[in-house]
Length: 283
Image (cartoon, rainbow, N blue to C red; front, side, top):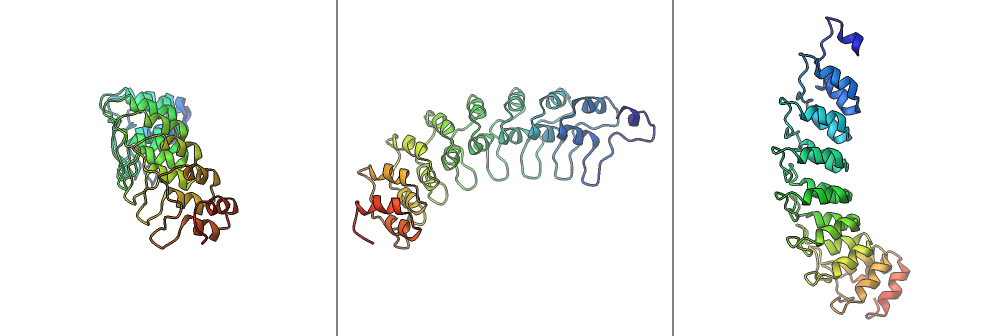
């Protein structure tokens, strides 16, 4: 790099066809020394994006390259809130991959909005919850501007996303917040409990059932309950937990007339069938 930069005919800021400059490539791969060398050159624009509007800061943030992020954030000519074509700033990119150090650096900047929505209506908190980054979730919840119950365009809240993926630590943290509705459905009528039951996350199911606001038998847009999904997918442990509730109807049919027992039988889940046969009439 040093030898090339000493050549007068070499342009240190010249982009590739897709807009990637040498600085962008160095930032993407975490080459601190090369990035520092390039930033010292007059012809280099530290905020120049590629064709989809992802800047060098964006590429270093998504890779968790703290040294380069720090270098770029010290520059007056770097915009830490530059949006790419998906409406994402560098912050949610760092959040998505759980790069807590990079997240912390961005949150220390006054001009960074920690609750910025992307084109899908997703907040950084939702991204952290989806991927189970408990430390980053706590960091974001310390920000006054962050709404812990903000849904995306499909009505999915951070709690609903964490429940679907079975991230117990994140679910616990979110349930400690008074602003979080533990029974809030998405646009398809699916609550956090239903999502947890769907994927067999027994620990999350237990946590949610401890909340009085949670309806354990609430149907989604297809008329299916948490028990229906747990039975249809063969999650015997979750089925057993739900059957222990007096307010769960083990024979409730969905919009197509399918009961939990019928769903379990169709898919050959014998352990679940055995549990359900004690709770209602035969198929």
